Length: 147
Length: 51
Image (cartoon, rainbow over all chains, first blue to last red; front, top):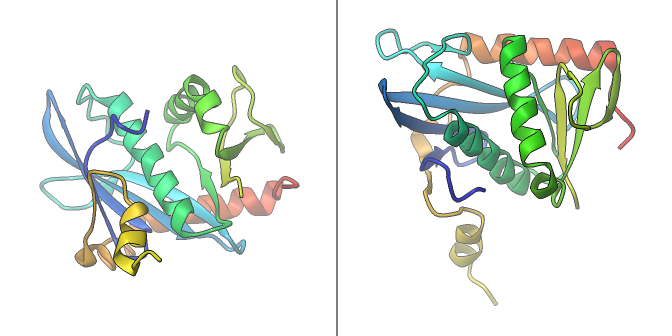
């Protein structure tokens, strides 16, 4: 699974990742940033597209570059690298829209057996965190590397 | 005994390259600050699971 991802550049502390999506709409720079939350050891996974004109990042733009699976795989690979460097870190992720959150859920579901070899995954359903199950409409996810 | 270079190379699969210019590049980006605040709200409101 991790073999099908884009080449990525990473900051020395393994918290910022940048890669270029290549598809039908051309090349689009994408950025993943892990920022620590107010809870010690919990990091938010931020993901956005860089506007080629303004240079600003957005997580609402729909680029439709025809490579969503490869992009998601690349983002997943950054989780491997980040948690490999930051032992014991827990990553929280949520889509900017319900559609995107569902996309993340689908990505996790489709690779759950592979993911669960090395990670514990929780989903937020209603007001409760629970171990990830397929076909549940979660609003956010927590991921921690198994020790 | 493995050297430091050999060990650090193991952390990076093919296609990943460390770029020092990325160190501070996006840390002040408004998007990520906003998303982190949303994450903080979730953690504050719903807590964390027993892990």
